[in-house]
Every structure is written in structure tokens, then in C-alpha cells.
Length: 91
Image 1 (cartoon, rainbow, N blue to C red):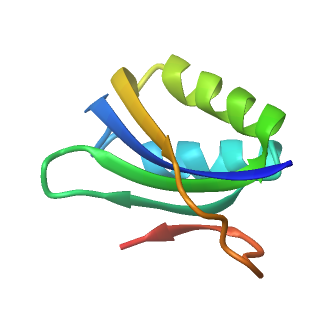
Image 2: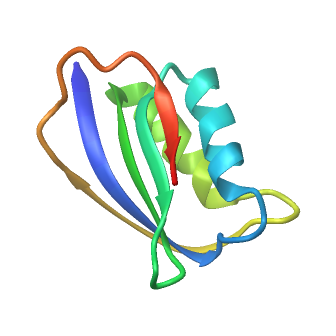
């Protein structure tokens, strides 16, 4: 079943390639949506996909990588978006 989440990611997530990291993971798990840096030093993600893939995506986001250090993730379900085909970085 398709789900969509609004996700706020806190930690060392700006200036470390996080948006590209998220975009790469989204491709791996067939996730569509957007990722954007916010003025409060967090990152905002809208992610849509099959629930099991979203769970895997979120687990990988939470792990981060050698540059990214995620301290917390706040996710809430939001309505799905029709006709969305890709995962984009928003500037």
C-alpha cells in the first residue's frame, strides 16, 4: 500500500551531502518525493512509496553515513501525491 510521510531530520544533516544521500536511498527503495534544507538547520523530506520500502528508507536515513549524523527523525503520515514520478532535491 502506498504511503507518504513528512519527515523532519535533525542532526548534522546540512553541508554534508545529506540531500544527495537521501536521493540515492530513495532510488534504491523506489521512493518518490522531495528533500530540502530548512532554515532551522534541519532537513525536510516528503517521501512516498510502499510501506515496507519507506520503513527501509527511514532505517537507512537514521543510520546516516560517515558524514551524516542523524540525531532524531520526526515522521508523520500525510496524503499521497498523484502522478509523482521521481525524488527531487529542492533548493
